[in-house]
Length: 420
Image 1 (cartoon, rainbow, N blue to C red):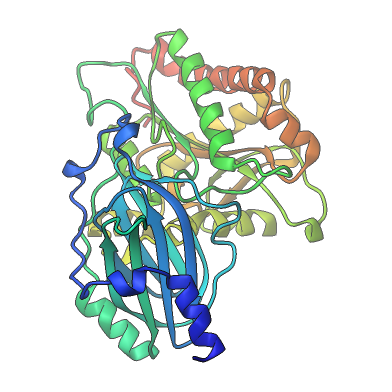
Image 2: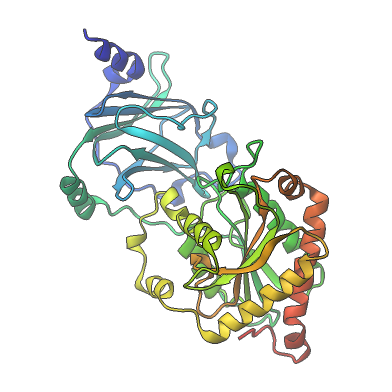
């Protein structure tokens, strides 16, 4: 037996002898998945390994119990996406950072309540030869097995066109039903960036942006609710991935009067040092190179999570290509200026604190929207502030005051939150 064959056999272990004939992968029905909070019933992924070469590669995930899966491929960049019921990932540190054979790297996480996702970056076009799961047997754990075979680009794209039609399950967001016309208070939608499989930027000590911004958005929500002048809802209130277009749709369907997306930036060491908060509004032309870089990075969130944007409905596609309405842009800029003014007293500001760029989440044509970068995860002093409950509280107070300033004239005039 060749050295390569020995390595392949060691990686696959018992999965080779137990592997059944490939069965068609069916989309997961979210209604049959564990309810949020039913953690004792959630399968646990305990180990993962990859074996093979540049022609044929096998991916194996050890599990506490057998699960269903749906696997499909996406192009540009080449990816294999595996959707499964909600899984608790207890894999070795840095699992997925490096691959083998056809696999460049992979990532995993919660993509919605009741559903998890594994995204495998491949070195080129691949075909899913087999995708199946095995029951635990002979002292071996249950396993998810994925066999990938190298192919050419034309065949890869043909497969996508013919077969890649997985059921798309809308992310279930917390919050009120669309448009509560019986409550005249303005509805403010807070959008903590990233979530689930998309961790966002990393701090100097491994802190995740998705956790930092969720904690801040929850604090800001609580501050706003105290006055009882507003209704406030978050696009996500847990570690769930939500596509960018879904965030836009979430705000529009509920008749939001203001949309605030919360993020924390990071820059490579090679680009020097940067610090301070920045407030962004929508523009098709970025105010500077840094704004353009950030917008491009944030707009790739759906690519990171393996979402096929070509399947979006036409109404959302139109939102993304049309310019925001002039009146809405004016209101957005008005709030952004107020936010910068209030943040001066509590937070360190970027040297150019008011910027614009083409962020997808700011493209609702009828909802005033801003994106707040609280600071830089890559800067020591900023990171210390971002992870401080005291800083979080006083900065949330400042943004709450900006909200009061923005809606003050409308509330006084009895406009009932119509910010447009």
